[in-house]
Image 1 (cartoon, helix red, strand yellow):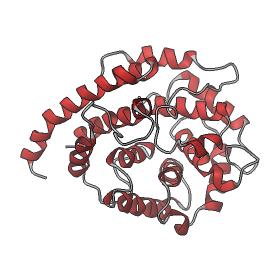
Image 2 (tube, helix red, strand yellow):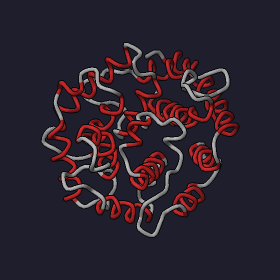
Image 3 (spheres, one colour):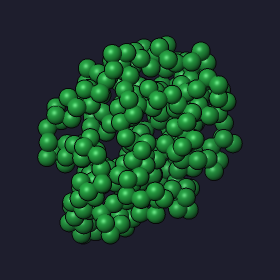
Image 4 (cartoon, helix red, strand yellow):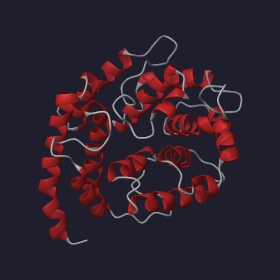
Length: 286
């Protein structure tokens, strides 16, 4: 990595963040804008925590907070339909808090207690009427983010591990959807399990293959790494400089990411926030 290349990218990254903020300001809701301001250190974290905690219901769950509606990777209609609304909303809240490094917030313990109560007998989350494979995304994402907290009970993660291990296989990951890769990657990165080392090798290989073939764009690739709470996963050899260059190249003229996503600006808000978060993380590594 040439230092001159790094120095050349710094002004471009700063401009990209400014343009991304402009897109969120124009098309995002109040919570999306507040989250973005906190990410950019333009608002105190406490303000955002107060707002998010204000949505929490007495049973510890959250209503849907806009990640899926804003075009979050993996939260396509099929995945959303496989989750009861309170599970989806609570997962969205925990992801938002995780992105702000705020899983210490008091509301997290109540959210974890709610998710334990609605965990299905087989260790999964989702609609019991659906097929087990339809519950992979919800189960991997919920247990993965819970694994990053200090309040989840071991029995919850053990149950999720039995469910996901029963569905895990290299064949399932070959040319898998982003959601399946993210589910297994999030769980095996954040929860200790006998399969973790081998499973993450497969996740990393498939993630890199998808990135190199442009099946996954840079925002999706980096969003998966963010869910894994990592800058890299075993089996992948993705360089931060290359990722940043490609990420900056994917930003649209209007400042938003996921420019080709169907549905208009509204479904590009979450990818744009993800892109900004990824730019900031990559710049810290260079």
